[in-house]
Image (cartoon, rainbow, N blue to C red):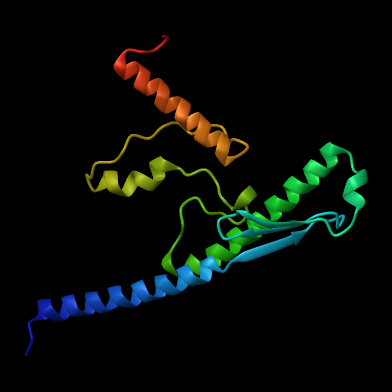
Length: 168
């Protein structure tokens, strides 16, 4: 007769290996995600990958040439956003069996919404575990590059305060 602790450990290890295999399959499926959306006026077709990255942009007709720039920009942005939302929905479907994914929302523009860090860290705080400080959410930006630039400025300013070079 084997030790009950060894049996529980073997069961847990088997469950872990099964979950790891399923996650590996889900990762492979996620890497193949692609969503293509045609604009309502059939001027633009946008394709995005699993992370919302634009992988193809097509103009099925020459109608875009006569559109005012603001109208073309609006059609492009809304078509890309719709494709991103579809891709986020597909990604959520792939990972849904593993539980909720914080921040992912097929109904939010671009497929993601602002995370509520207080809510996310609440179980850790309740368990008495240390949690990182939570910053107030920033206003949504228009893109990742702007986010990177703003983060760099914040880091530079913090460094200036630490080393005494602020304002020089």
